Length: 104
Image (cartoon, rainbow, N blue to C red; front, side, top):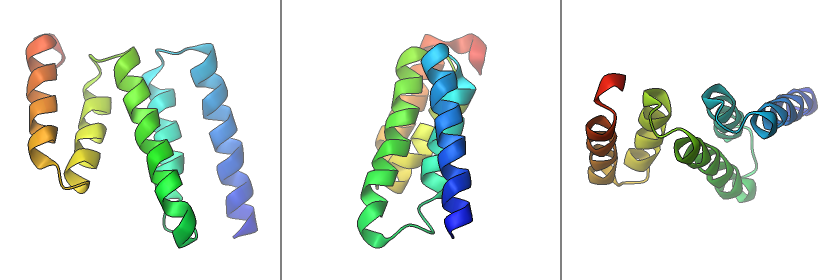
């Protein structure tokens, strides 16, 4: 577990550095969110809400920087559905599809 924590921290720092250097780099936002969200399984129950929030915030920041990225939108929509907000997820995807029809 300690080794996993070290690896997770290195990955988090690396993707945070990429995101800081290139705020519109959608892969950095997706990967950073993934680091947080994948760590939920090994986290202590008390730490899970903060990790989830950090992952969600990374995706939301990515969408604010690049609303035209379909992968970010899909990941964020899955989180909304997970939160019990499936209609919000659908509305998000429909709205982005209308704003950026070329991104399919």
